[in-house]
Image 1: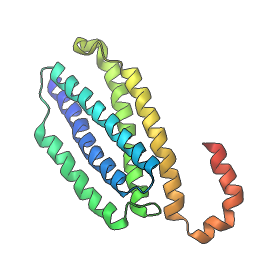
Image 2: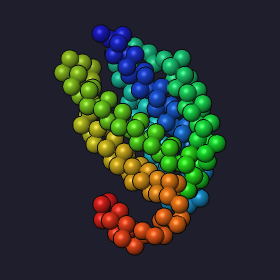
Image 3: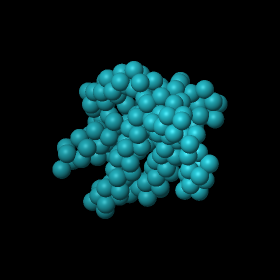
Length: 178
């Protein structure tokens, strides 16, 4: 079982390496200081989660896989080629798609923490890990990125004419749903 568990954790570690690269690319494309700060803080939090994953792997007597981590970075860079083609600036399709990938990745991290919390009774080397708190943080991260994703969708997918035609009533609905 430990080999499969180690592989599962390493897969998430590899995915998070790609997420860090993507977050850095988004931050570089941002124009507003508030957005830059948001993505830098998100990147810092993902790095903290990467450290937790690394510690979990080591606690089970295994090692993190440089091969998988490198594969995760390469996959992220390859995927980012399309996003760069589409653009990462506000209003670009690439930014919307990048945020969608981040939301999905963060949700994957959330369900990772849920599963590990369920495995915790059989993994005494993890007894001091607060998986519920890690899950709550993942939910907060996902929700914050999701809010930006929805805004990016409106900017990227709706023509200015459509937005102008529905703006007064839709803006009220969108703002009240947040």
